[in-house]
Length: 219
Image 1 (cartoon, rainbow, N blue to C red):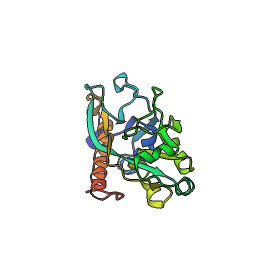
Image 2 (image 1 turned 90 degrees about the vertical axis):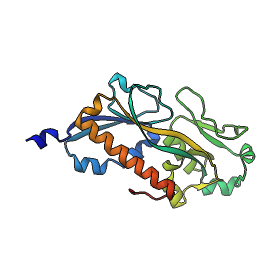
Image 3 (image 1 turned 45 degrees about the horizontal axis):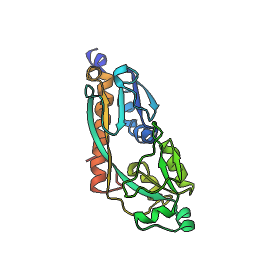
Image 4 (image 1 turned 180 degrees about the horizontal axis):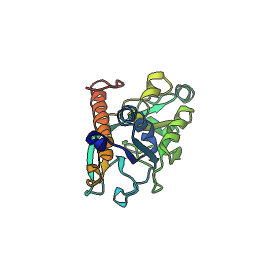
């Protein structure tokens, strides 16, 4: 009876950016097998809704954290990669330097505040198309609309299959990614089970990818 009482069960509300949604969903399999009593919901949004409002229990957040009262675990740091489809490069040519990007259609992410995310080049190449959803941005690149700078972990499969290719190397780290929850909620078995599982698998995979890009698995 004591074991059953301590078994994590009940609702846990997750949230993350749409572009990280597939990454997060792909790491839930072992968790739900181990704890079948969990009832998970996942909301996808690029807006930074505060966990303090009680809307969500666990969040996977990109970028610096604004609310220092929350419990946060750094799980990995993103890395920028400049990609395009083979069809686009065959049609428009392959740039070899940042200056060459001025002659290409650059697809950029349009943030919630209505501003595009600048690329780490000087000068920042002009925007050919701005898209306010990360997954749609990647789909636009797959469709041959231009060149985009995205998080490497969001296009790992595309690079492996050849659907997308690296244009040239960008030796720049992107923003950090944190797993976040309210400290009081982490005391709940159901929230602790989800938080600890995701913190472990995401951090382990991040460590593995730094040693051997493209490989998954645990240490």
